[in-house]
Amino acid sequence: MSSIPFYAKKFVSGINIEEAFAVVERLNDKKICVTLDLLGENISEKQQAIKFVDEYDILLKKISEKKLDCYVSIKLTMLGLDIDFDFCYNNLSQIMRIADHYNIRVALDMEGSDYTERTIVIYERAAKEFKNIEIVLQAYLVRTEDDVKRILAANGRVRLCKGAYKEPPEKAIKKMSQIVENYKKLIQKLLLEGQRICIASHDDDIIDFCIEFIEKNNIPKDRYEFQMLYGMREKTWSRIREKGHNMTIYVPYGDQWQAYYARRLAERKENVFFVLKNLFKS
Ligand code: FDA
Image (tube, rainbow, N blue to C red; front, side, top):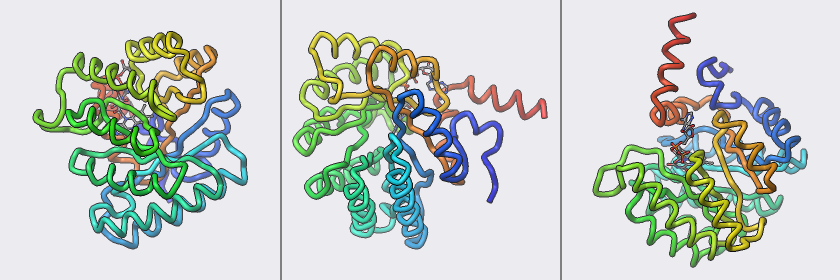
């Protein structure tokens, strides 16, 4: 098995469960929770999806055995959403049964807008059957205001992020100031009406806004948490945790790291310069 190249190690914790667990344990020691993401997406063979289901089953069992403060995140295209809707749902159900057995949360990541409706339909169906499921919504999508109402009507467990995929202007807000404005509008409704809301952003403007809103409205600590991606703004994690808010870090691992890593590069030109500088050094 290969290893993660040096330039991707900033964002990807390792190639296998052992390397990922070392990061989880380090963060748990600091009273920071982790959501582990086994990397993989857009698979085209049923066999690959079945292999990922087996890997998630093992992961959930090990999280439970080790009593880690840790849950999991999953992309539905890794479970066969591109192949067949029911096949994908059945794969998710198998994971959800085990997750519910161990009482471990499962978050459905949100991929490009071609998958939004199907991801929400699968989530709505699963939320009727399983208690530990939550879903990501993206503040840059025009449709998200309506989707918030749907999720609140299902089980009200949402991770709100800005959105990381290249989308056409008829589907997604393009101006960053307007995305932030929409994020703030949506998060207020979610914090007031949701069951468990994950504020997934590294943006100080959004974080400060949420802290003020939470304090002003006395939102109980068990109804929300802040979330960031592994490799970004580490000092801020501890600052938020020390203020008494729950903090979760999204930690990816696995040998299918390329697509995830490309999205992190695309978010910030400084990351591309970092890679180029180090490639030319070596
Ligand atoms: P913004 O991009 O404005 O960043 C604010 C600051 O954070 C920057 O100034 C910089 O300091 C730091 N920063 C941000 N990006 C960085 C980078 N790549 N490298 C280094 N520093 C960086 N998206 C999606 O479409 N579907 C999903 O399922 C998820 N899931 C998800 C889970 C979690 C826990 C998080 C935190 C994020 C996601 N995302 C996601 C990604 C999200 O949509 C978004 O692309 C990134 O979080 C960047 O947006 P920010 O709100 O952090 O602000």
